[in-house]
Image (cartoon, rainbow, N blue to C red; front, side):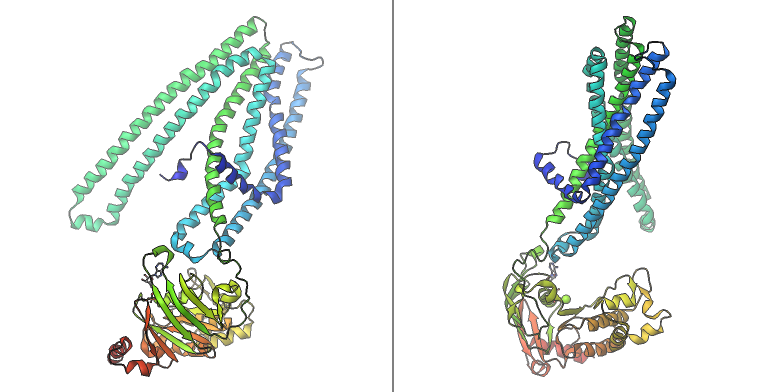
Length: 595
Ligand SMILES: Nc1ncnc2c1ncn2[C@@H]1O[C@H](COP(=O)(O)OP(=O)(O)O)[C@@H](O)[C@H]1O
Ligand SMILES: [Mg+2]
């Protein structure tokens, strides 16, 4: 059972103060909110006319006019008036609160979304994203319910409770005293008891779910069950789980039975006692019959209000928990908050990149250094390759360049300046990356290419697709650029996706291009087409290439070999492959002999 299913019952002052900050989202709509509160107050107060009028009617009917001229038809007209008033007020109240809650929760969702996509990468490495999304959706829904309904109901019940008690104390003080001494205690007792029973009911459901898991599992792997002749074993497992369900169920039934007895004897006993007391007073002429009826009706309203308060209170506590989680996300420093003073606007880089003794370990695995003093110097406009075993830290170098993470030691400079001093958006707009596995957004091919530069026109899109060797296959689809891809659309081959990513990168026109094993998962034939497209893309830019197949990097200007966190070799393909004991030359021997 998770924490949210079982809310704390006591809320500390700090929690409350923190939680109340969520009301900042209501601020823009406060006029409506306050108006709604006023209407709520009106309708709740006017509602109390009903229990009163029921008693008055009885007195009038019996000839005990409370006021002169007050006949039953007059009362009927008053009642109709009150009803119409109630209806109108309630309509506007609901509309006011609906407006406020819809708008403010939409604002919360927007704020969360904006926050989430500007959070540092490490946040996503630490949390399970799917879980996060469903949790936040739940939390926002809770806040919505609170703003829309629960808060209003809570206030309404308090008004009914206080108003009812005041009215009774004024009209029939003695009887009210008797009632107040017995009733609330019993109602609170019933609530606590009810909570206990709900707990058992939940336990029973969990156990049922457990036993269903067994059913599910065995049917899923029925082949294994039969092949291993484990039917008897599974039967035993299921029987045991079932027995547990029965045990808890019986305990639950016992609780319910006692609860029923409690309600019938104690609660109704108290009610009848109070009514009996009232009858005695009617007989002695202390109060009228109408006053007794009013009293009983009010008591029912008050009882309902107390029970309602209990429920809404636990909902409110749940909402406070939701607020905390939402605010926790909203208060997490975003990427730019973590780099105060980084405001140097990056123009178009010439692409002079220096890694100066870079140390790095991932925040989520702080005990495992990935880069242990890496030095690189990349000339503007040159093509550089990084090779090394899988896990050597090649992709990490690109992550550091994109500032997904910050180096823990050393300095990266581009065009002479520490990259940490650049304003992030203009900095990143200098880069484009083509990864090994391109994931396209669900949408049309056009939208996916435009992602590189949303302002590009039709001709530019087609030209980019052409240069990326993608235009031919795009044109062959009946819907061309409007073909929907991704989960809901057609599935493109790896090479096709790669070429769309290249078209996107061409449109982006980056000064620095990062290719992270862009062709590694392709078959030889599509590799050739993609490689050809990449040549177009690399023209005139500083390019960093990570490649598994050395054939693709034979003509780069400089090759760096990364091993155990250090650059261990550097040179051109010819220089490195002629070394006798080098890592690169042995790799090259292996690969080119195999080809
Ligand atoms: N996001 C991450 N969090 C923690 N460790 C990571 C992360 N990404 C990569 N690593 C680890 O860092 C090391 C280098 O990874 P990477 O740069 O992806 O290697 P390469 O690209 O050379 O195959 C590996 O040991 C990998 O397990
Ligand atoms: Mg990698």
